[in-house]
Picture 1 (cartoon, helix red, strand yellow):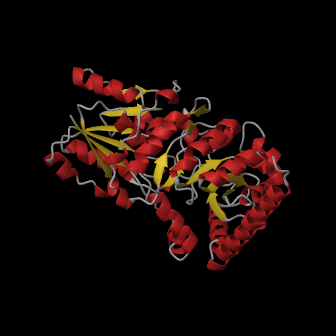
Picture 2 (cartoon, one colour):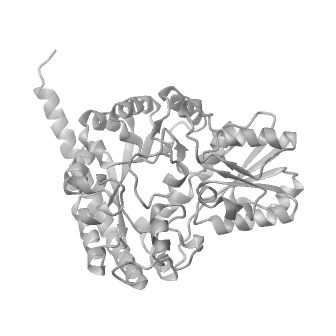
Picture 3 (spheres, rainbow, N blue to C red):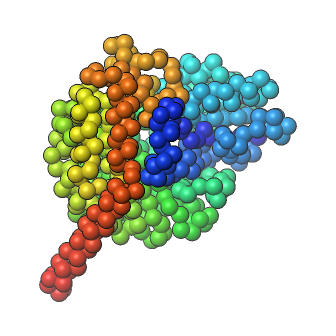
Length: 447
């Protein structure tokens, strides 16, 4: 069977005002390019779980020609999509089906809205697909394939992870390659969309399998920039030190997301600095502990807010830049509070900053709350779930005021001078940390 794997990529802001602003901001545009040039690790992993008897092709959505798929006699078109690209994914799926092609849909959005996805596909995959995908292929061959394969109650064992099929990619079109080392997150943030798909416990991939995947990447791309497709890589600090030691020999530079507790472990930071880690993305959200408490099932981020600046400094002194993430539009936020978030972001000495608006993704506790309160602006406007478009009525300001606050934040934080200031501050901290470590090494007694 010939299977076309189609990745929906590239998020486009709906608001004309924000799109107009974005094209004038170098930092903002560069971040958008990075997001758009990542391959779909989910599809590559399913490719690794596909028996060798099947022929596979990997396509980015921009390259899909449905007529060509039909002419080349692809038997199955498997589409993976996030929420913001769901309308486009449904459009591709509908055209494929009208031309007689069998369509499967999966990914975060199909997991949150499987009944909706079934309106546009012959088969839908909800939850983690490493086990249900091979099951489906066997069922399809036997003529008993079901319409819905639902793994939302399961938690896949990463010790059984198939090797992603990186060789399917045209590597020249990507500036980063994705690799997963851990799955899920114990911090239950009410707005987190990935928690819809990955509801199981925090899981770590065995380091020998991480090494296997690194070797496969290295064979194709000797010095890649890696992006770890993890929700919170360094929950387990001891395992994290082992992960850093596994990455180090490959000479790659890499990026991942984690929480602020990474700053508590000096040995882990030392290992990360040696391993080629170039940036950690950490959700700091807002300066007010009361606002943070409303975002979590348990007050983790709220309990750490007061020490954020010191934590950022400790990380960056090891030559690892911190990309701090902030959210505007929390229930406690007024326009003045949004301006305080910007000032807070500027005060922390971060190397990079990401500011978005609160977004109620389907399946999240946040969306359920706003739906109960009648505050969603449009019930199924999935294309506006970009993290930049306003999709709900804030509690203490209007939707227009929130959009204005985001515009102001972007205008202040993404100027060329602000970017230079952040870069200079980071380099000063990195150099100070290097001097401190060298002095400590010289002062240490000889063995």
